[in-house]
Structure formats: C-alpha cells, structure tokens
Length: 161
View 1 (cartoon, rainbow, N blue to C red):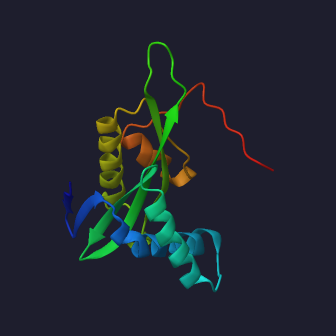
View 2 (cartoon, rainbow, N blue to C red; view 1 turned 135 degrees about the vertical axis):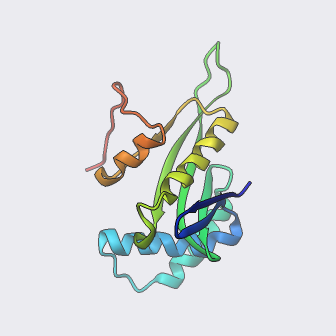
C-alpha cells in the first residue's frame, strides 16, 4: 500500500517495490557504489540485466521498497527475510535484515529515509518477524535510532578477511 510523504518542498510516494522497478533499483544500486565506493566500471548494462533477473528471482526473500518523487525512483530499502531454527515454543520463527538503503544525496535529510524505513518496519510487523537487524554506516545510525532501532548488547559480528 503506497504511503504519501509530504514535507515542505518534497512530495513523495513510498511503496513496496515490484519487478517493474528493477531497472530503477539497479540504477540506484550502481549510483550508490559509484558515489560511496568510487566504482567506475563500464558494465552498467550487464549489471542492470543481472539485477533485474535477481530481483524477480529473490522476491520471496528480499522485498524492495521504493520512494518516488515526480515519477522517479529516488530511494530504496530492502527487507531480507530468513527463517530461523524452530523451538518447541516458537515453531515458526522469522527474522529480517534491512539492506541496501539509499536515498539520492540531494534528497537526504528531508525525512524520506525515515518514511521508507517506517514502511519497511510496518511490513516486518505485519509478517510477525521476531527482530530486524541493520548494518549501518556511522552517518546513518541516528536515522535508524529515530525509527526505533537500538544497539543490542548481545550482537556480535564476523567479517571475512
């Protein structure tokens, strides 16, 4: 269900993404890597094709959410879903992870990111997820805290070398 967002100069639609958004989502993913990681590859068309196929093949485990302004997709977030090991008291356990959140730089700090994350978390509630995690840049931590994420005392992480 779309969610209109209107704050001053920005009127945006926040909604669940569909396979029809795959090309726009691929463009945002490419743009993020170029801006933040300096990626300068010349394989854009190949990536868009691969990404569009990936979106369709992974909709059951990776749900996209998008922000549109004037018909252009300007932000995205993904909710990755996973089944957890059952227990005698909780036989159907699911968890989520927020991934690849991105809003174009010219619209950051406008409230769009928070609106996007609120929609993601509404979906998590509707799905009955036990918890939702996120791996964040330092800059984005305050945004996640504003929408309800908290630092967990028992979370540990491992990264490959």
